[in-house]
Length: 325
Image 1 (cartoon, helix red, strand yellow):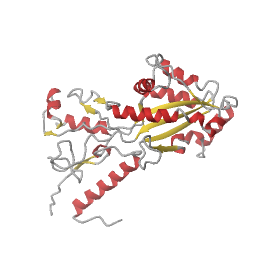
Image 2 (cartoon, helix red, strand yellow; image 1 turned 30 degrees about the vertical axis):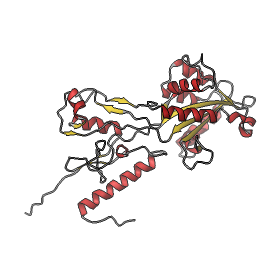
Image 3 (tube, one colour; image 1 turned 90 degrees about the vertical axis):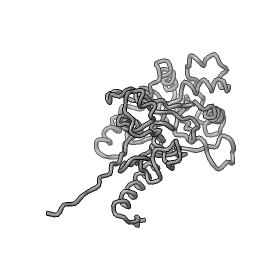
Image 4 (cartoon, one colour; image 1 turned 180 degrees about the horizontal axis):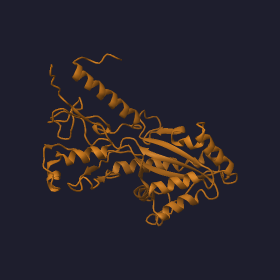
């Protein structure tokens, strides 16, 4: 019987937290940090550093005060029935993808936007808005303040996303015990330039009620009850700076913790073919290899990384260039 020898390669495709978490537990990561939690060091690489994400800042408007209405029971039942029957249903509709926009906060005519907006509309006393507020983790005071905007009017919420943040965070092991969740420091707003960008965006969006379209919908900016900010002059830069510190959340676009770059780059984890520096037969193929976050939603870029990584694997195993495209 003929016997063949096979060389096995290992590919890691995952969410960023599992990547750095598992690599760290196996001894691949920053040597000083691994030693501090009692993990033997196999490769000294900056795994878990360079964590980038798109922070998200909600701005809430009350609209349609004289014509607002609650969703009827019939509408809610119809939406559920259509969902169960495989038809179009509002429960399948993600409003954030129905209306989005891009602006440049530094120039009306600049070619590169620095803010993306996603937008949500809710009828008066909407159960959808209550679900959103429950999921965000805001404290009771802030949550109740948001819901109060929807008590007697419809609401329009726009989320401001800084597309190319300067701030960066890190992910580290809590201990050598795999049952302990990792420590995630998102690093939002640690670079003051990000705060300045959001202040410029807020000063633009606070003027939406002055436009003809929003004026016809009786739009008014809703002031959130923020204990730490209430004594500041409303809508001043100092107020917005406080608002940003307390209201920033995320749209879950984490990238960068296994950054791609040449072996001479001390911040890089993988090379241009997604192979882990210093390791044999080990690749990373996911959002963590991005050197910097893309200036848009990360979904398409992640699909591209997966496709390109698959091509590289085939090229290495088959010994030929990819010719499908």
